[in-house]
Amino acid sequence: MSFEIVEATIPDIQAALDSGEMTSKGLVLMYLDRIANIDKLGLTINSVLEINPDTLFIAESLDVERAVQGPRGPMHGIPVLLKDNINTGDKMHTSAGSLALANSYATKDAFIVQKLREAGAIILGKANMTEFANFMTNNMPSGYSSRGGQVLNPYNISTPTGGSSAGSGVAVACNFCTVSVGTETSGSILNPGNLSSTIGIKPTVGLISRSGILPLSSSQDTAGPMARTVTDAVLLLNVLVGVDESDPAMGTGLGKQCADYTDFLNKDGLRGARIGIPRDYYFEELTEEQLILFNNAVDIMKQHGAVIVDPANIKTAREIKYSSVILNEFKASLNAYLSQLGPHASIRSLKDIIDFNNNHPMETLRYGQTLLVQAEYNTSGTLTEPNYIHDRALDLKLCQQDGIDAVMKEHNLDALLFPADFGARITSRAGYPSIVVPAGYTAAGVPFGVTFSARAYCEPMLIKLAYSFEQHSQFREAPSLKSFL
Image 1 (cartoon, rainbow, N blue to C red):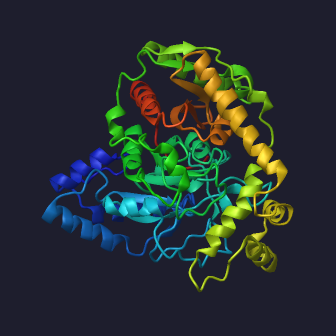
Image 2 (cartoon, rainbow, N blue to C red; image 1 turned 90 degrees about the vertical axis):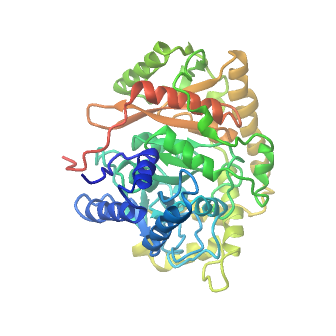
């Protein structure tokens, strides 16, 4: 009987690899077959942007190493897809989904890619994404890029994929890889995690290195795991965490990283945990069907010992308005990244990207580039604008001190619980961690999740809660992939 790849977890795969039932090379071939037949033919889900040309050689080499020396650890021989804004110093491009950077090669691996390779992971390829992390224009659909086209939601074609780590979430949901790495600035892991019925861990800014990742915001960006189970997401998190002295944000986590986050995979993690629900503001866009799913999730948490504080409203929720932070940081961050590309790179600045798009409008400007133009011509790139400085300070005050910190202290909470990804705006500006977990499906088959959030470096508590809820609910179902009708 052949190995069943659909919904196979990292522990499942490691057991099969150790027993000789399967090889990593065979595993890669199975994923490639699914990518060919489902992602690129048939349903044309379009979540995978590029395949690593060396992936089979890497897999076979790791099989030999396993036989001769034994596995390096849980990620040995596990195929991983990376969002297309994560540098790989190999034969793959890093383009952020853009045609302007379609021929751009990074000179070296991002820090987290180095960590993956050291752990024996197989970099299978790059995942499609919303172009420039959905900061190209105002009306671009989530999951669309000029280079890769539109990613489709495998659960319901009329439903968005969520952005901007759309390909990372959808590829995992469809079993085109074992796990993937996404990035988030404001909801870009939590949103596609919610809409693809996957686990998304958006860590504290500073827990995982951002070096070698094409940026959007120097204050909010972070990479994070996407997986089909909390266990798999945490095994991937273990590998991604590491001290990178070239990323200044990592100094905030000194002494706060854990050696092994699987220590917090506790089935009884909900018992006695105080979880607050910020009902005011964050529930206004919920449909009645989604509200039923959310309340059912809360009932499950209560049944397994959670103390629910409802409501635990965030007093600043309605004060958090438009902020100029990302607009100002984008130009400065992107230009710094582009300046570090190899000597033969033709694109060296945000202005070069805008000019390229203007010279190829049919291919690149289907939805325009209003945000790119605003960032280039309405900001200095020096972060000296008074509105930026004021907005950055206000974001921290409203989202950290007077927002999440205040409500958690007031009610002595271990975590906050948001419907879907609706808390992403406040948690992302705070730089605080969140984990989204499947919580059911609407009658139309659209996934719905709940998000656990907390203060900086509280990943251990969030992992306990997410794992316990997952184990007691088991809501996730694989998409049928037979038809969108």
